[in-house]
Length: 215
Ligand SMILES: CC(C)(COP(=O)(O)OP(=O)(O)OC[C@H]1O[C@@H](n2cnc3c(N)ncnc32)[C@H](O)[C@@H]1OP(=O)(O)O)[C@@H](O)C(=O)NCCC(=O)NCCS
Image (cartoon, rainbow, N blue to C red; front, side, top):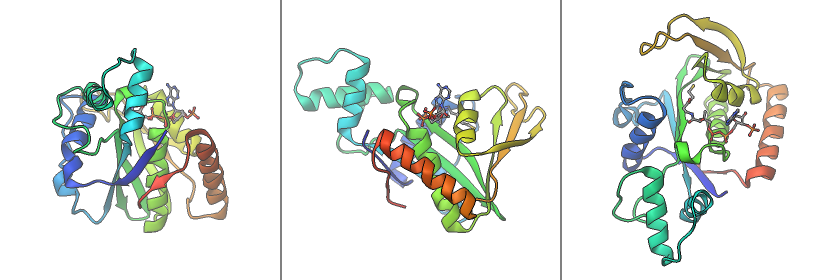
């Protein structure tokens, strides 16, 4: 799996909005990504698989045709993103994103999402790794977040990186008044946490390939 991690650019915003709507809800109050690009207390990262990877994913999920490569590629990308696109190569394909706000000593993950058809392939974990690296670089002491009590998949991801539940916020989500679990790491700038983090990244590399991050 060849996925490149980098900072959000203006050209990515329409795709990130699509991912946000798909992952959360069409009624979700959309983030003003354009304004956030200038927020120096925030970090926005996107994960971009190379075109061949997107094609490979599509080939896995449906019978491949004998069309020419460029046609199959364009078709694959269009089907993953669910809407027509002029040229698959002209725009960099975004598979997922993460947003983090730096608040005092905390790096707070506000959103993390991967396109539904590309989940379960290490992209969410890659986004978490990138945001963790950036938080350490920024000087944050801990990472925190809120997650729906019912969102076990996301909780598993955070637990893997040693986030612990430290409390709940009653009725936190306005759509269904669901409670949020508050999760936080131990201090991330310690040797102990960094050892754990290095080990997890090693495991990630051996499973998914090199971590390509233009941080
Ligand atoms: C949460 C999310 C970002 C994970 O992204 P992903 O690319 O599918 O996750 P990865 O493939 O990188 O998996 C990383 C870890 O997440 C957990 N995980 C992922 N899919 C899982 C599943 N189906 N069941 C249980 N745990 C799962 C596991 O801990 C996994 O590590 P493992 O493979 O070693 O078991 C993705 O499911 C998503 O976009 N969900 C919708 C938006 C959302 O809920 N965001 C979180 C808001 S707090």
